[in-house]
Image (cartoon, rainbow, N blue to C red; front, side):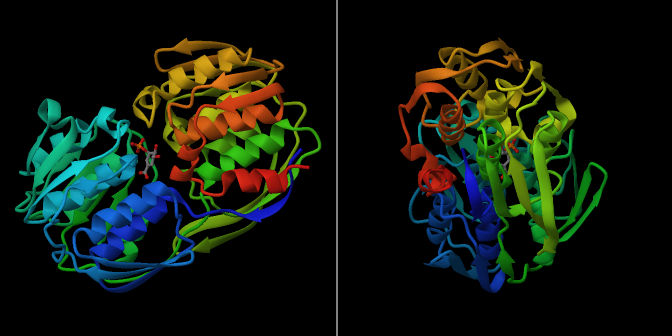
Length: 419
Ligand code: S3P
């Protein structure tokens, strides 16, 4: 069982954005509770290569911003490692800056589609080259002289939206980005605090270029996507009771809380407060023996996209048939997460069927230990480490170090909470 309380590590999405926006602001920025995960460190490394002075001191990061037009041409290729957020968002910034830069990443990044970003950036007048018509790395961006756009997004993606908002900061007039479904809005919130001219009307985001962004002190709330693993662990293991402190509760991210409530999970929000424009609170989660199945589809998907692997584990412990659909995007994450989840759950004895855009899971089933293929995907590794908590036998992960991408210290925390 899991017992105890702990302070949650910083949010990955917000940490990336904090480094990027600080780097293109004017002045001294301080970022507290920054996530020292490999992905966010990749973002730091890319901006250092463009001449930004970034210093790490404990969980704080100090960034001396170069100003909106002050980044230097990188002397070296920009390597984003495993980070989809870095490569998508940085493309928007590079498109606006008058120099050439080449982006590469690891094997997983090499398979992740970039046309969703490079196509609209080309519409803004940016010259971009890359494998398969700039769909895959290496991608070379020749930035500068962007025209404004009025663009209807074709995928529900905060990464694409953010790249286009960032490029719009450098455009020659007002841009409008129309979302299909509302996705996480940390870019809009944080850029406004830096002085950007952004207004949001329903699914339309209006951006007017500004001369400069101005430095900030940013506190990064805890990452609900990381909390998700501990939430599910506590819900499915007998006797558990955990308090997770300092969880980011921005409503574009809290789909998992709605799902847990729909499934009759015992979860409570305590001590809600607003920090730097983002809602934060503590979560009290208790073992929930009477979980029921649920359906997860279109409107909620962007609000819990990264939590689906561990929600699938939860569904194996719920009575009835859980359906997850409209989640095709899962196929182009760090791994094909539909296949990775379905195949591994089958190995553990779950009743699960793969769909083109999701999966169907029938519960409640006693899981058994298995050798799990993580595909070096941090969220697959953590989801199955949670499946291990309630199963007969042992889960053996073929890779554990990938967890450092988003949750350094994960196994120590799990050990500290386990009694
Ligand atoms: C992210 C957005 C999501 C999410 C990713 C982080 C972000 O991707 O899966 O882990 O920080 O904007 P998409 O917006 O492409 O779905």
